[in-house]
Amino acid sequence: MTTIIDGKKLAQEMRQALKIKVDDLRKQGLVPGLVVILVGDNQASHTYVRNKERAALDVGFLSTIVRLDADCSQEDLLSTIREYNQDDKYHGILVQLPLPKQIDTDTILESIDPSKDVDGFHPVNLGRLLQKNEAIVPCTPKGIIAMFEAYDIDLVGKKVVIVGQSTIVGRPMALLCLNRGATVTVCHSRTKNLAQETKAADILIVAVGRLHFIGKEHVKEGAVVIDVGINHDQNGKLKGDVNFDEVAPIASAITPVPGGVGPMTIASLLVQTYENALAKKPSNH
Ligand code: GUN
Image 1 (tube, helix red, strand yellow):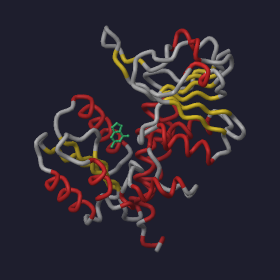
Image 2 (cartoon, protein in one colour):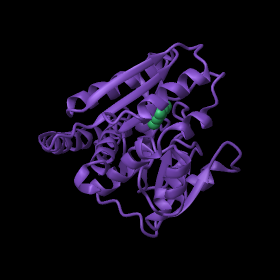
Image 3 (cartoon, helix red, strand yellow):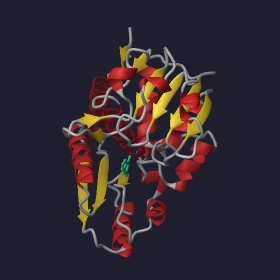
Image 4 (cartoon, rainbow, N blue to C red):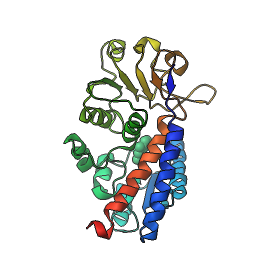
């Protein structure tokens, strides 16, 4: 029997548990604050940002969205970030990606106070992850690790194959798995004989953003399959990078889309914002 990894349910449980902790923190006079900065009018980004705000309010955070015009200058965005770096009410600053062409993403990510970074994209936090000193780590990979823990999927000695080498998912995912004792392979568009690589995986993680890119010919019998993709099929339905109907029967466990990785990303963002707030508690100094 294939286990369907229920990210929606697990994320709800994490958010319920967090709500109680936030209530407790509020009684001690500290309310976690998250600001999400959105530049331009990318439709998908608008949806993601609204979902993040709703989730943040639901667990009792102070939550603010700052919307800047698509043609805003890099300096406008930098000065907005500076303002929130200095505002003690906010413990998390998230700049939604992608950014418009006139803005240099690396400069923006570096301008966020590393202690207020909730995406884990600041070079200081990525560097700590590389040093096996995990503090603030990217939310999607963090959510996937939480799924492995909840479903008792041990990484020690396992062959993990990751398809996709983005800074948001593939690269940090590789480090988190390596830090937990897995043998890791990262595949990308230049990889030769992809199916040969992916078929060797005990755990296959796919983050390429291409509808049904992975079929049954890519998967070993009994593998764990994690699908990070968010794509729309020709009927506008949300679908992953993995052909679920084809792969589920041969996998030992698999995440659905929707209801798999997506909700875990948001839950991880909330946990990380809470942890940043906790680190600023006076008794912790
Ligand atoms: N765009 C797509 N995924 C993400 C994410 O995890 N964080 C940010 N900031 N932007 C994104």
